[in-house]
Each structure stands twice: as C-alpha cells, then as structure tokens.
Length: 273
Image (cartoon, rainbow, N blue to C red; front, side):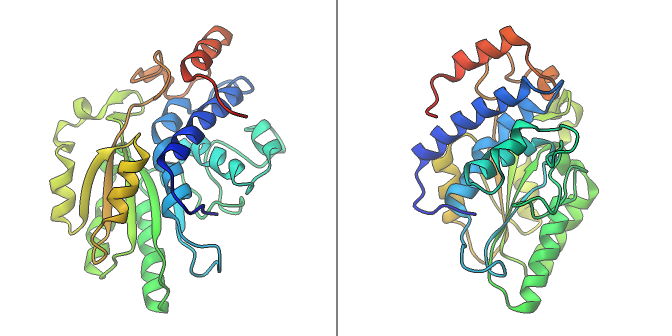
C-alpha cells in the first residue's frame, strides 16, 4: 500500500485533493472531524507516498497505525486514492449499512488497528515491534499521533518500554497542532512543553519539523538514527488550508454550511480530478 519514488510536490498536490474530498464528504453528514483531519494530512500522506516500504509480503511490509483515530478521514482519503477502499464507501461515510465510521476499524482494508481511544496506538506499535523482533522480522512501524494523546499515561509507558526492549523500528509522527479537542494544549497543560527534550530523555531520537512540509518530514525520517526509535514532532495548524477553520476550536467536530463550503473550496484552489 505504499508508493515509492517520493516527490514532495506530488504529496502536496494530493493533500490539496484530499482536503477537497473531505470537504465534499462534509456536505453529506451532520458533523465530522474536519479540522483534525486537515492538520495531519501531510504526515499521513508522506508515510504512504514515501516512507512506507513493502509490496512483497504482508509479513515484512511496513505497517501504519493512525493512533489519532479521529483524524480517520485523512487515512480514508489516502486509501481511496491508492485503490485500497472503494469510493462508494467514502461517498457513504458514516451512513447506516456502510463500512466506514468515525474511527478506523481493524478489518477494514488497509487498517492495521482499531483506534480512537487516544493513547493506544503507540503501545500497539511497541507490541507489534517486539513481536517482530522475537520472530526476526525486519520492518518499520509508522504511526501518527496527536499531541493531546501524549498526555495519556499509556503513551509514556510505551515511550519508556520501547528503548528498554531494544526496539528501534518505530517512527511516531506527532501532529503537534497545540490543540486538545476545544482548547490549547499549551494553555490547558503548559508543562507539556518542551516536548523534544522529554522524549530524548526516554531514549528516542527526536526531531521537530514543519508538519505540513512533506520534504521536511521525509528527510527527518530517512536520516534518522536506525539504532533508536524515532519521534517526529510535526508543527501543524488545526484546520490547515481554510482560513476560518485554522486554529478555531469549534471546527474540531463540525460540518460547514453551504456558504462556508464554497469559501473553503475557493481557498483550497483548483484541484486536478
């Protein structure tokens, strides 16, 4: 489910199309996690269109987990683009009798873990990576997390455990948009920062980049220290790409009305079909 020959320009163009696709879906449901999906799009797309390796065997293909389960539309849009899930499923997002719901569900094509209860993804990744180590399987496990879920105790247990077990093949990309649901993380929990030094103290290679810059994300991972697990802190904007959504808490879970929808389309700009 990965595409090699990474091109940052290609990923940027695809993300523009994904934003358009998610906006169209927003007109078919009463509410959806539109701003959280917009903030993590480049992180998710860079994984699929550059970082994930595989295509030869399910046992050795790299794995992707969207720990930030409420950003599922970002992943669903990518999986649709790759032909992993049919367009009709997204056309009927959150409709009775159709497969796609608010969060990713294991068993859906392309979904490696059920997520949505925040704080589970990293622990799942550590378990998978340790199992791979015991079986002698060489693959990487990528996951996209939210900064809000980094407050969960299970995350810090996993951060402590992975290096202690000699696990080095996890890359966690954090959607660092400084929001947790309806409030600023830096206001709600100011001691959350600085993050980089905390993560390094737990034995992880840590890099901070522009989370909307596919080239910066790709380069940070490609140049990582392979002897340690890595966290990439991606500075992002919640609702990225639409001015009235950017860093406005109410857009955490809401659908635009017709006028807002039209404005969002104009701001995103022309998108190739």
